[in-house]
Length: 450
Ligand SMILES: O=C(O)C1=C[C@@H](OP(=O)(O)O)[C@@H](O)[C@H](O)C1
Ligand SMILES: C=C(OP(=O)(O)O)C(=O)O
Image 1 (cartoon, rainbow, N blue to C red):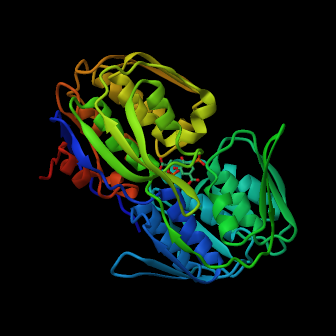
Image 2: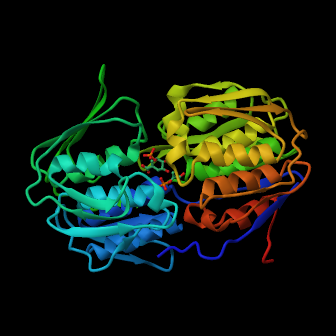
């Protein structure tokens, strides 16, 4: 199981131009889904490019606990021998999903309509996050959940013995909730319908179709209506996971703010439901180009080229874009600190229920480093004064949140004084090679433990 036992304090000192090629790891969302859908198919799914971060490794362990065979070859290819829809066995251990909201919520959905029970837990961050957003719709299938007060983990899910299909309008923009309902719908007879007002990442829909499920998506006045026919036999797949746009954001944003930089980040998945950050950076005046645009495994992919961009301006980020860049606001706020003027980010209440309250965590750390930040319940704004103007010098709390830790490490590359985080350990949940990758580009990152 993941452990974030001993904190790993890290420091990022101002550095010279960043240059070179940044090969970021596989997409976290697609990696979780590859393992889970592979475990629900009949036969062997092969996965290359799987993200081997703690979040995904915890999902691999969980799939084994539910009866799938999950192995890794020395060359990094993963094999999942699935047990079929409805075929999960009851785990004999508590399922520890570590730091991963995606892992726990999707797995709860996948087992919710099997006649078994499972108890889930996570680290101190995950055990604070809301689970009722998933267990409420799962109850409509006939699933029961008993957790701590406020719908928190640890929590036992008692799967529905005779599940019924459901129609559910997701009340918050969340691909995890949508996906949990769809995965539960796989083992319900008839049609399960999910309606989302705001489109969120659609990897589950694309991959369910790829595995042979009957699934349709229709844009209506009500929103996006997704209809899944239950009880399919999922066919095993060969999956090449594209590289993660959310991880690519860190070398890209670092290159934009460090004078003289020129960095190439190849093979990045640019599914429109994920690419909002890159549209926003271009709107701010970033020198960011897409090269070699192509399609791989049903997803649009390009090589991103980012160069130092001294003329970036603050903008109002369109709230309609929020879902497509939800994990990128922390690092966007760092870029905004080096742009001229106000960057306004609205419609981002969801940031408060991630691995940490990301508005609060970033606002506190940015202010400590000399940046002006204002915030409300579902908005925040950052005022920047251009390159070379940010003092830095502070230690920031990462709150067991990888994106907060990496964002402040990026910031320290361009401030006047080094920036530290109290714990860089959580970076391993999504981007285990962040440190050597950024060092190879020229970043000056160090650990207090040497
Ligand atoms: O479905 C997914 O893979 C994810 C959905 C998003 O969470 P929400 O569904 O809570 O918005 C995102 O923040 C997370 O990193 C991955
Ligand atoms: C929110 C995130 O992940 P999760 O919800 O899976 O913990 C993230 O990776 O930024």
